[in-house]
Length: 472
Figure 1 (cartoon, one colour):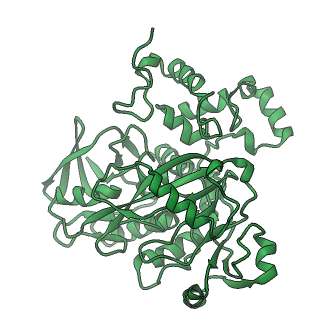
Figure 2 (figure 1 turned 180 degrees about the vertical axis):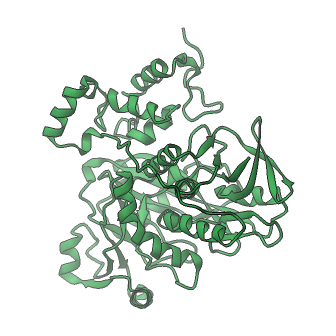
Figure 3 (figure 1 turned 90 degrees about the vertical axis):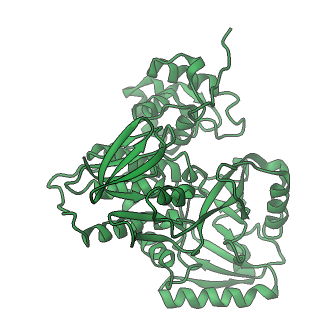
């Protein structure tokens, strides 16, 4: 019998799991995919928002501002890079200026650092901006992180502190058991006193299983495109337009790895599995970003992907215990700025639990994260020399584009990677210019060896995504 079962293994579910691991509780996280971070979190832009876009009258606005403050310490604890590169919102025309003024007023009201940058100074700090743009609003506290690496670190630290994980187990039913629940997941039946619903675009479906269906989730698809690293200096900050009615707009995003992303689109859909990218989406993004940074071209794109944002009919986060189903807590509708808010959401959930009949007693001993991932690209030459003395496999490069070694792949497997995409998101092997043309067979060979699984049974991301149809 578990005290708490969390449904959903994205950034929010894992942030909650890690926070709950501080307490004398028996907790389990249930995820339908073969690995955590394989849902919305893997398609996240990695932006830690300043809070300038969101009203403090909304829950997402308040938790965004709190989350932005928490990321400094959390990134240090989990040894994940976090850079406050700042964001700049630009006026592409005179009509945009009133919107920027409102955002500036919002920043002042909420104590968010912001300032207008104009003319030559604007083009000194962002030299590749269109010469037609003369005014920008700079919010320096915005930052970037690697979202999947952070999700994995939260997962690993939660595991270290006693949280159980049931992966590759879709929740198909939930029945009441007194004040608790019996969760039917895969082939297992899990008993838990509380359920926390962090199931992303499927959160309304999970809520329906217990009759707590007082909200609807409608996916909003966003296509994004990654540029070649040779354009790593095309922007120094995250460049925003003035926001659109249904999104923060199409951005030019400085990533933690140094490459640049452009996007996303914002298209409402009824299909919770639609992760396709389209020629029309690409054209829309390129046409838009070139009004801000005209030096970006279609030939600069090396990869594309799409993600689904879980938009609730309230257009706000839904984080509360169900009024009709006691002990069932929703963490639903976590759209942008969900990544920014994730650590604050975890604390908010603990606050909700503390007001119930569950005893929250902190552990006398709680393990800090002690599994930092050694990435060759982040080490100095001296550090590389030292690490090679410890393990020569750091000198065996399996991904040339991203300089990923065999030792890093083995480390990722030791930490839970079971698929080619699991290796990709933990190490960046396959994310470079050749898009896995060189490294795929090396990664598969190492996975097969370390997991003792034939290569023809390895998958890209679980399920039916077999990498080799037939081996001759």
